[in-house]
Length: 369
Image 1 (tube, rainbow, N blue to C red):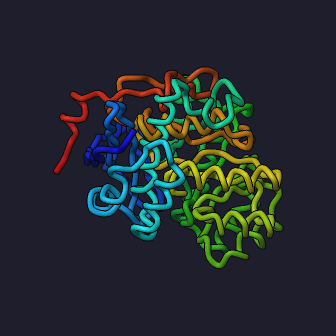
Image 2: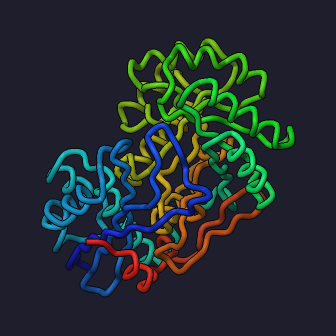
Image 3: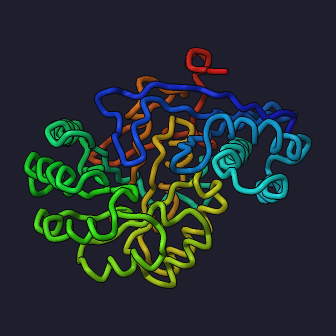
């Protein structure tokens, strides 16, 4: 089997205005992503997705498209799609970084591997560890809006709420208070500042966050200097989650060595795909550090990929639920299958590989130049 072509299809899919996230990086009203098709001479096609946010990942729709078409495709066409390790090495030799673009192609190769094996990827990667992936939903915006959304989401089956902070401190704390008051004490809440606070403001917030029973604090301030998050951890009993501090394998080694945080949030496409994510998960497993899946609000293809990892990785144990909720944020999707929410857990589509098929009408509708 040989790769005959690699296609990169740019799409722009609107997000629901009601649930759009207002974070410290800004507001993104649509998913400007790349859907990747890897074609083979046996007729098997693998699907992938790049879900960049340039303020967070340093990539956007244009850079991903350029990388795949002009740098990745030339070194992979004619190669064996089942040799994913070789393909990853060739992509790295062709250009540095561009992790989202490389992840989209690697994802499509894994989809081919699963289809050829006639197995879902969680079986290819060692087998199913759990029936579903525990998830949380994210609320943001004015305090009253966030509280209303949180109540509505719990009524729809979500069991855990994350609140976006990282803005003006008093307004952030007002938002957290409003959400806590709107929910029963049995519904955990956590916060995510996306590096938006200063170290000093994060420290000022601690007494009230502890009083409100916040279950975790995710990336309260800048990832640099590295030792700051370790110093902050000494000041609170609230578990800390690293996200922006965990992009590379070196980041994982440093966090494991210093024990700077309690929980790791992994976003596989940000780590360049499954192979590097697997390595980071291995470090976490050896260090007994629980993990969760972060998100760039992926469409169905990328979400299915993350779901397969979530089903198979021992360290993604639900200590803090994952953010595998991209399909719930978009007006439509580019796949035919649906993600089920049952008792606070996501159940990805079943089937070989990623378990999804592209909706050609949706691709045509949302394709952009």
